[in-house]
Length: 407
Image (cartoon, rainbow, N blue to C red; front, side, top):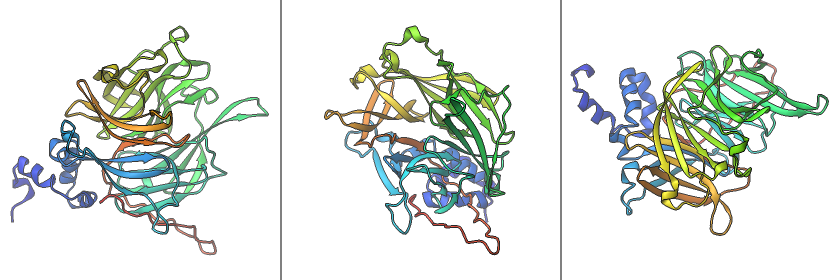
C-alpha cells in the first residue's frame, strides 16, 4: 500500500481538488495535513474552475451560492448559482434571519426581531440556541470567536454581545459588553478598562469579521465622527484594542453630502488576512480601493494595497454603495455586494465581479427595508456543536436541527 507521503505533491492537489464538497469537513479527522492542503486549495485554480462556495444573506434568508470566477469573461456561462436555503426541518420558512456572523465554518444567526440567537454548522446541520442573560435588543451587535488556536472544539468558542443604548436617567449613551461561553453555557458581564476602550463614546459602524478566531470591526467615536479605526477583540485575553486603517479619514471640510458616510467594509482572506474596501462616498467619489493585511494580530496590523478601481469607468451611477465583498486573489478582483435604487426607484441589491478592467453583474434583486445583504466566503467545518446538558428536574430546552443546505 502506498503511503500518503509517497504521492507527488501535484498529484495530491489534483486528487484533493476532486473531493466532494459534503465530504471536506470529515478530512480533518482523516489526515490533518491533507485537510490543511484541501482548505488552501479552495482558493486555487483547481477549485475555482468549478466555482467557489459562498454564503449569502439576502432579505431574511441565508443561501449557499457558487460563483464561477473563471467564467466571468464568458457571457454564456452561468456565473452564479444558488444552492440550498437555510431553514428548519419543520418549516423551511420559519427562520427569519436579520444578520449573520461567520467564524471557521460556523454561523451565528441573529433572528428578525432580535429575540433569538442561533449558532449552526451548515455542513452537518447541527444547531444550538443561545438564551440571553436578560434580554436581546434589535440594536445589539454580536461576534463569534474561539480561545487560543483550538478551533475544532466547541467548548473553546465564545459569543461577544455589544449593546449600546440611550439611558434616559443618565441622559447619555451607555454601552455594555457580555460574553457567552459554550463550555459553561452561561453569560457574564465583561469589564474592559478605559485604557483600551472608552465604553461610552464608541460606535461600531460596520459588520465585524473573524480572523484566526478574533474579531475586527470598523468603529469611530462619538466625539470625532470623522476619524475611523479598527476595533479588535481577542477572545483569549478578552481585551479590546484599537488599530489603524490603511487610509486617512476625511474631516468636516471634505464632506459634500451628509447622505453617505466615509465608508469602509471588512472581509477575510483564507482566515489568515484582513482586507479593507474603502470609498469616499460623501465626496461622491467613484474610486474603490482595497487593501490586504501583510500582518494581522489584535495588537498590530500592517497593510499592502491590493486593488484600485475607478467605478465610473463602468457607468454604474453616481454612487456605488458596497456593503460586503470577498476577494479573488488569483485574478485580482473583488466580488462585491452593493445596494442602491433600480430604474423603478426601488431598493435593490446587486452582486458584481469588479477588477481593474472588468465589471460584470451576476445577480440583482429587490431588498426589504433595513435588511442589508451580506456575502461571505464559506469553508466547511468539522466542529460538532455539543448538546446542552439538562439537569434533572429542569425542562429540556427547545432544540431543532437545520437542514444541510451545503450539498
